[in-house]
Image 1: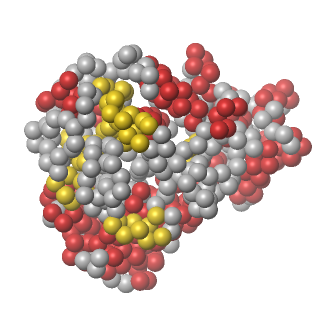
Image 2: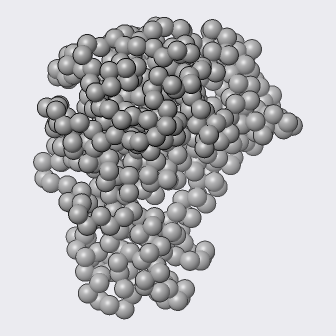
Image 3: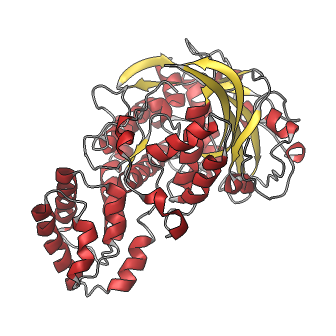
Length: 501
């Protein structure tokens, strides 16, 4: 077994000062329970940067205490394990009560650099049955746990708001999905795992006292600046709507597709939450659906901004009894469209190396997405390659043109782009540096994750560690890791991800 690369930090696991602020809420908000042990667990991978946020020192991949704690086989002093109740809309339909069906919150620990709470919650995903498991078995599989681990850490490195992933432990215990797989537990971190569906639960059950209690808890701990607002609940909805719009603008700009944007998967802190059938855009197709369970394409790339707004309206509906007035609630929600548009255009200008704001920016961006779609050009390679272009050196354009089947269409757009750069007196080298700082060379392509997963299924975790190392520096050239930036092989076209993880 090839051991994972381990971080160096401060606290050992038995010194980690654990509390559980979520238990300040009334018991109706959660169920206290213990994780279900897994036999003979082992450490698969760990994130040094995530561990550093909580001052955790992981030195030994064979530390039995650490492995047992992050598998759920042993409980830290101070921990009050629980699973939270929530409800939600799934694929646009009210699904009723859901809850943490396989997630157990261990508690929260100090994280001094994390504002405003200065704490991070630790949650085990795949730690066994809970009262909210419905027809599930409460387990996660190694495949999906590695995908979540790698993607959450990759998103953090890209500067996109996200939950974090501390580590993954595995076991040889068999669980059934489409086929026999082995069980795993992913340890996730966030200031809070409260979600839109947490509020919907109390609204649709007509329990407004519990709704207010939850909202006050969230404001007190994560949005204290709103405690003195004229209408703290309107201020909360406004801020969450703003954060959601900005988060999804970041998704669109990097080509990330969530796959299951149900309201129970939307963070009240504007974090990317619950990595299931996600994907990064490769051959650009605005209608691409990364989740093969999503037969209607509700969560396609092009529809993510619209669905983000729909979800905010669902949250607004839930908060209406606290805000008090429909007009005030609608006023809070109206921020979404302009906030998304402004942030997305800001990100696109940076991706294209533009220095000024011009009235025809929208046309330039729309034209680009049209030609990308028409030729199914690789999203990440296009933007990265475009940074290498020298305006007046024809040969420098060839690697970019080679990504397009319809070169005439690309040339037409490139003329507009070149004219814009010249109007700004854009200089090649500074523009290249600026573009490379925002256009990643490395993203978590499905085939890269699959290679790492297949090795891990044979107890070789070296590729998971290597891939994490690459993804933690997505904007660096890393010439020794050039193969991780390559176009996907033909066999990658057959890869599918679904909600079955």
